[in-house]
Image 1 (cartoon, helix red, strand yellow):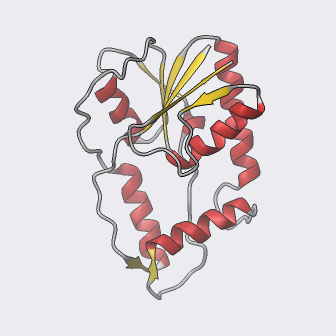
Image 2 (image 1 turned 60 degrees about the horizontal axis):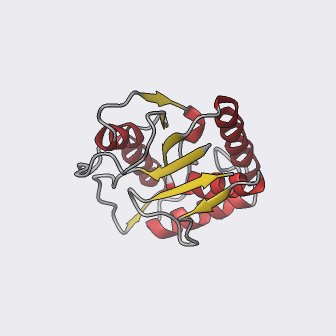
Amino acid sequence: MKIYIIRHARVDMEWPDRCTSHKFEELMDLYNTSNIDPVKEPAMNVPCNNIYVSNLVRSLKTAQGLFPNAEHKKLEDIMEVPISPYKDTEGLVTVWSWNFFGRLQWFLNNRRQPEVRKDTYKRAQRVVDVLEDGGLDCVLVSHAFFIKTLVKVLKKNGYKVEGDRPSGLRNLEMVIAYK
């Protein structure tokens, strides 16, 4: 069984340099509902029609662009790891800081984040279990931070992974996992 994991296309949204905690929450909601840049190249030479998408629009739109003739099945567990402001403030904080410290809280299992690391790892293991139960080659169109966790779980489960980079995947890049 081969698992082709693709990061969604670039989201068509501009981020400000700085914002308040309330504005960061609004921007995250907007990001999760924004459209993507058009996908110009359909079908990435992936020899299967078993395509899974998350519950976020950017995942589905990417799959529709890459695999226009395939059925796309929702697999909610491959959604992105949600992120919330690491503190409440009316002061302006860089978007980079909101992301960095929010992910640090995630890593430290701080419950200020809607999902913590141990929960994300459990979710990634559920994904592996579902895919192994199906036993078919498949494509997952997912999200950068979740993909990093999923790749770690796949490796822990004995999979070899091609295309994994320490800096993470860029939009529309793919990793392939197999046993």
